[in-house]
Structure formats: C-alpha cells, structure tokens
Image 1 (tube, rainbow, N blue to C red):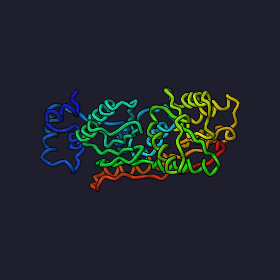
Image 2: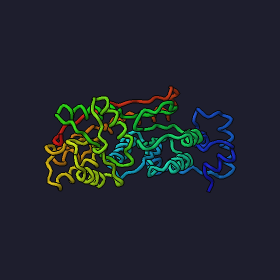
Image 3: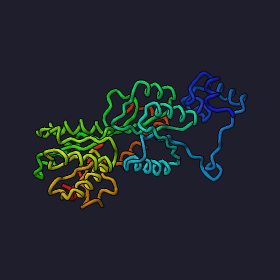
Image 4: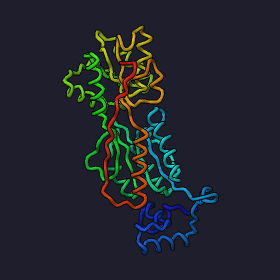
Length: 330
C-alpha cells in the first residue's frame, strides 16, 4: 500500500506538502501539485475515504498531543477539544507523550504521514520546546497551536497560556488577607515550574519562603498530596496554609490532614490550582485558582482553524487571566 511518506520521498518534499497538494491547497504551487499527482497516480495511491463522506460532508482531522490523561486537567482538555472540533466537522486523533520529547517528535511525524489538517499540542510546565521539536515542526509543515504553561519567548508558532504567576499571586494575597503567615507548598517533580512561581509570588507579596514548609513527592496526584502532608507533619513545625500545585494534590492533602485528626482550615488551610469539577464537592469545597479550560480550547481551536484556512497573519501568544475561586478550605 502506497503511503503519503512514499510519495513525499519520490517527490523530494515533505509529507505535509504531499497531503496539501492532494487536497488542492492553494498554498502549493501548480507545478508541485502536478508533480505529486503524477507520482500518486503512477504509484497507485488511493486516499482513504472516511465513512463521514459517504453519509454527509467529509470531516477534517486534528491531531491532539497531550502529556497524559490520568489527571483531571488533561482529561478535561481532551474532552473539550473533541467537542469543540466536532462542532466544526473535525474529528480529533489523540496521542500521548508521557512527558517524553522523543515521543512528541514521533507523533509530529506520524500525524504528518496520516495527513491531518492541523496540530493542537499541550505542553506541561516541566516540558520545553527544544530545537529538535522546532525542527520536527518545520519538517512536517503543518498548522500548529500550542497550549503552554507560560509565555515562551521567540516562539514562531501560535500559542495560548494561563498567566499562572498572576493566579498564584492572587492566591497568596487571599491567604495573607485571611491571616495566614506560614505558607507552604506541596507538589511533585512535574510541577517544579509552579514551585518557582510560588517562590516568586511569595517574594512579590513580601513573604519569606521557608524550605521546611515545602514538600515534594515522588508520586503524583492524590497519592502525592497525601505523601507531602505526611512529610510536613513529621517535621518540627508545620505551615498554617499550603498551596497545592494542583487540585488532585490538594485532595490528597485534605485526606491526610483529616486522617491526622486536623481540621481544615483551622489547623491548616489548603489552596489548590485548576478548579476541577470534583473540587467543589471535596470537604466544604476547595479554594482554588481556576484554569479556564473552556476558554483555552475555544480560543486555541479558533486560532488553529484560521491557520488551516490559510490565515497568514503573524504568530500570536495569548495570555488568559485566571480567577480565584474561594470555598471552604481557606
């Protein structure tokens, strides 16, 4: 069976260019289109025809790449992206990197060979867009939109990010206003970026960071939050409030504090990040910094589809403002 990669090799061009030429994309020169069409005909290439085209308009395809789907945040992103693109007659094909940059590069090439129309790439704060990743994007030559944890200088592609520093600073100010002074941090190795932002927010707020009030776990999610609280309770002194790097860590922290016979927020306040759907039902509701997933997907989807439809404007990075959701844990 002849693939797009086979045609690209014979035409001495990229897989993405072959895919676009066979779709009669106006960005591809007439000369290149004719060359690719001749090769495709000669080699007996037959484009797969989706069932959707039999019963109605043929759908486009979006490649979605995320680090994982075990956490509530990434699972929500996948769910919302699937809904959003379906409304525009695009199906979503999912790939998971497990925080492995080589897997991310491999997925770029796989999606290019599959002939998707564009890529939506979600990056964790522990990941970076390396020169190797940029080279892979340049090779596949597909419209790409990044969802990142922070502003990335000199990024030549569209991106959207939440101003996490602003959100964490809002959370710290809230704790200070409630009378908390010994504020700690719990997280795991994939959230060291938020630890750096916590340090910066504390400094901006005129608060000292005590290293003995910081706990980092080797495990993730609820188990990680539980482990971090056990670490803090074993130390001579404890914070009167903690910032949990994300809500699932906060849920584990609440469980550990309750198991230890401590009251929340009387003995220790808990502040989370993300505002997962379940967070309003835990304890008396988790005070948290809201990650506006609906807005992130709506805006990133619109930008990506504009690129697919030949928008030639300069790349943009869009910052979203977080909200502080105050509930019963502070």
